[in-house]
Length: 128
Image (cartoon, rainbow, N blue to C red; front, side, top):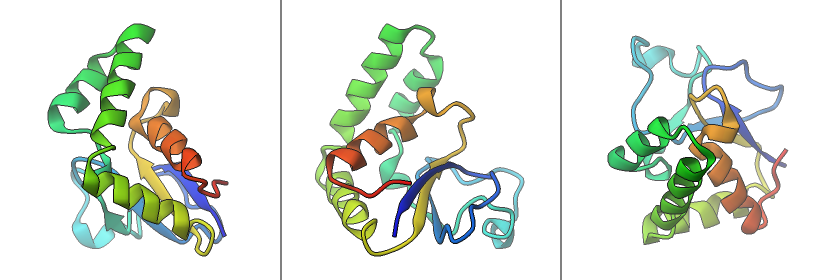
């Protein structure tokens, strides 16, 4: 059983399981009935995405220092009760189920999902 960190909209891996969208907004121009069939997401979980203000900072980050400041602020947001408990749950489920967590960004190294990956690893998640 494993958790995959993926780019939403990319082809699914065999046996990937449920795809969770950790994004602030749902896919634009895609009918809701097509989200899963088009490999976007099965479940929407905006609690694991940056706040709108922080999301804007992350998108605007051009230097490593700006990105690091975004990552620190996002980690702080993920320490709030709801996201912290959700991360704990996903880490535990990763030992018993196949599922994926993702975002739209092309480059994971400049995406909040890289921070989510690290936070889940710290919690002992089994990540593919």
